[in-house]
Amino acid sequence: MSLARAIFTVGGLTMVSRVLGFLRDIAAANMLGAGPVADAFYIAFRLPNLFRRLFAEGAFSVAFVPVYAGLLETEGKARADAFAREAQAMLLAMLLPLSAAAMAFMPLVVLAVAPGVAAKPEVYGLAVELSIITFPYLVLISLTALQGAVLNALHRYAPFAAAPILFNLCLLAGLAAAPLFPSAGHALAWGEAGAGVVQVLWMWRACRQSGVRLRIVRPRLSPEVRRLLALMGPAAIGAGAMQISVVIDQQIASLLPTGAISHLYYAERLYQLPLGVIGIAVGTALLPILARQVRAGEVEAARDSQCRGIEFALLLSLPAAVALGVAGLPMMNALFAHGKLTPADAAASAAALAGYAIGIPAYVLGKVLSTAFFARENTRTPVKYGLVTVAFSAATGATLALVLDFGVLGIALATGAAAWFNVALMAWGLRRRGLLVADGRLKRALPRILLAALAMGLAVWGLTLPFDGWWNGAIWQRLVAVAALVGGGGAVYFAAALGLGAVRPAELRGLLRRRRPPAAT
Image 1: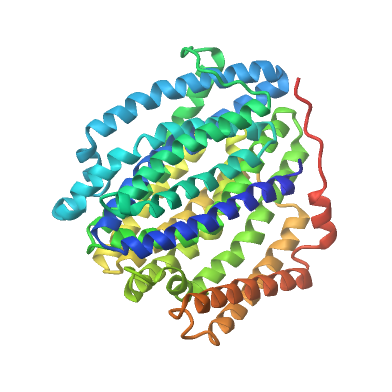
Image 2: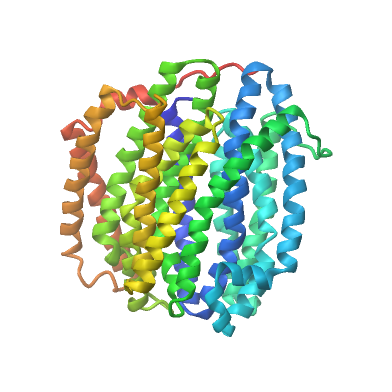
């Protein structure tokens, strides 16, 4: 499968998931608003996902895929699958005790990630209760991520990309059953726990259909597992560094008036759409391809894959950043400002969204550039850059939000600026090693992509004017306005990109042709 086909497969299914996620968040905003129950649930929602990104999508995945792909390339599928079973046993041995300890000491864990709730008893007690319900999701989603990493290395991207769809369906089912629970927060928490079970069963079936048997075995420190642990150590610090930034944002928000945590969450839901669809798609597709090319010594092919990853990242993320920066407020009003979420809440969330939007291209580029290190089993260098970035983000966020009184906008601005700071460090490190060399096609495409995105930004701004008053109108008016904004902006960008030569039809057809993957024995 070509890089472009892999990106579109993952991105398309991720888009379906994100649309369902929007429906979930719109329904949740309508029932929760931005009050104590909302703040409590979003603290509980983040906790297992925080550790998930650290273990499952952070340290484990970036260390596991190159080792598995290398074994697949050199020793065959049987040995690679045996390693996957050993890795699964090691993962369970780590996460089961961690989960039990976290649940036992949840009152302290909640205070660690949101110290400001100590002065808000109506939030604190409920956050502890809901976090105990949601935390087992960590073990379940980590198993799902292991199964997905195996299938991705085999160039079977669709099952894992579809798993978040099931997650959102489970949470929507929880909301539908909310009258049966003490609060909508409880319904969502139990929906999240149930989603973990459903996703594990879904991926288990997909693995069996692909001939992969990940049965439970006793933990064993094989040479490959030792290699995995050696790679995971620095990767855990690196992934942890990024998650520390998330925790710091929440800690700062907890010191602001009640509702700030919710305002940040709703802003994240919009900016995470392009980040998830584009960043995860490009990173997921690029890592196994690049790892195999590096292992096979295909230097030019690896450089080409890296440049195409950067090109796709900017082709898709720059217009998203411009659109959300220009039309964040009307979009936030149309999607979230109803029920218990007021227009004032939507305005506060839109301010945070503007800050986050600045960093969208950097978040996606960071996924691409870090892959160049991970594919070469270098997990140490991104750690150093990540730790420096965390310090930069924390100092900037605290200064803007608390000292200069920018509130949630200050937190988001600091996060966006830190993303660009991290990209600059990684680009410098790769160029110094001779691993980042822009080819002629990339140099030609970048300024054209930027001009096309700016043209689209002007069009999006113009499209917001005739729909003034519709953003807070009836449901049909909101849907029509959003559809016109998204459809019109997308059409202008696509036309401008073709007209300026940022992308050519012949190149798209070439990228979409299938490439036969290396044979697995």
